[in-house]
Length: 350
Length: 234
Image (cartoon, rainbow over the protein chains, first blue to last red):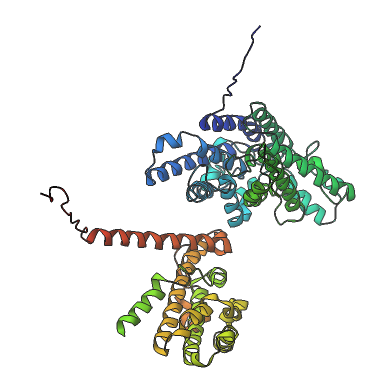
């Protein structure tokens, strides 16, 4: 039997180990996404990660910092990976490059580099694209099983770099489903259908939906949930932010669903569609731009969940994780100020 | 006299530029600088108002009681803005429609009341007129620069819609540098204006600090004279 005696030291992970762990935990989600949506996202991830890393290195040289040592912390790689996961698989390559350069150059380094950025770089890059190129950024193709023109590796590369597949199909043709309708994402479909007066049950009969949420999307979300749970198990992130976000999104959508079961998306659909799980475990938990106090993190997460629900239900965009994270980033200083823990031996400040 | 006027001009164009340094009048600056012509139009209108209000305030400065000077300034400015608005409505109707609410909002441009309060109410007519014109010119230059950058990034053109300001002669002035399949919308939307503005201010600071560095180098180092303190007493 091993007896341990005090003092206990806790081994905390260094920045590069932490970032590497987060990247590794993304892998199940990335693989499931590649299984359903083809090789596009793998290309995007490679492209975004390489651009982020290169931009970081160049800026470090411009700022007279040791470029190799600092880019070795993998934080730029993580930004690139998250950006690559978030964008549509066959986005033209130069859009991904613009977003990656903006994320690292403007959002991260103009504020002073790692540890000083107010906003989540990956999401700021994503939002830059979403505002600039709304059509391209919402052009997801249907899951591979529903697609009229299956796309291989070579086709994917051609689509990303030239806009046409090897057989000469354009992106819009590739997006056709078997029944000849351009595909929309599940969240988009629900939004349009509810707007047109269909009930949720009628909308859910469409082929873009799977057994309980969007076809394919439900498994992607489950895979990210799995990776996220491992992150929490290894204490890389805490419960507070993902817990706050998922509970708040569930409560909001449950209230909406209880009042209008036909007119709003179900809680299950909200939790397992779009970028919910990716956002909760990998994006909102960015240690730099999120809250630092425990109570603050619950509030921060809950605020993101509420905003995601509001944007998805009443906003102009089908998904709202990126906007919600950026809006919550703005509130971080305020939340941290009012959620400071009481110091032992001191009275609560009045 | 000439030296003073040159100093006033330099203040307005660069050192104390209303847009880049005082950061006044940001609302119209960011809202209408989506193209060169919009920026130029609003810049000219603002310059004319600034010139008129500075001259008038300077002329009547002895008779304005200190306590009610602000309302008086606002009324003078509002009169000029109304005149400009009617002129634009008559002669450049398309531009008048494009700028919309931001023409009457020139009244609230802090740069104008700021110059009336800080300069025109304390100085004679000629310096006040030069100050108003140069401040307006500085504002216009920044507007046009931001407009050019945003127009180029956003739609790949320069001087689009120039007929709305210069009449039908100018229809062919539009330069299309490159064609986009999809417009780079963020440059045309307000967030793009904030980003471009930030970069312009940063550029100005770089130029200023480089100039300071050069000035420091060209100045000979001050000579240090030592007083002998040891060995003086015998």
